[in-house]
Image (tube, rainbow, N blue to C red):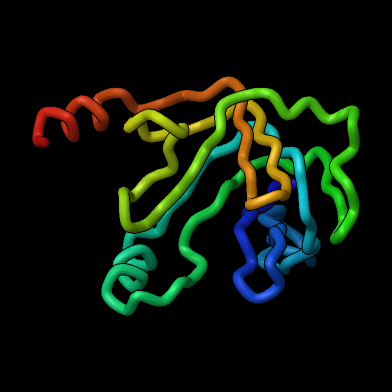
Length: 142
């Protein structure tokens, strides 16, 4: 299933919104504490980010689009057979308009595989494709 995954501010968990054409298109089909996706693209809505910056209030404007391979329901432990190695990815609307690996200014554009789980909405990505040109422009401007 192709889905848009985002952190649900009210339920304090991940929401998976179906992007497959059909009956469930655009509907949240699962609330979960962890999931695995493949062929992932990280998306940030710039107008949504600007609303956060001007109002100071959180809203849903960023997430991951990909193919859900597996998800773990609410309040269930992460299965031990899931490989959660890889780079830790973060997003903060106040520091930039993109997702980035912890400790780097690179913009993460794509990941072959993403494992997301609690605690603290930890995102682990494998096979990252980063946009180095944006990082170089940002460091040159500073």
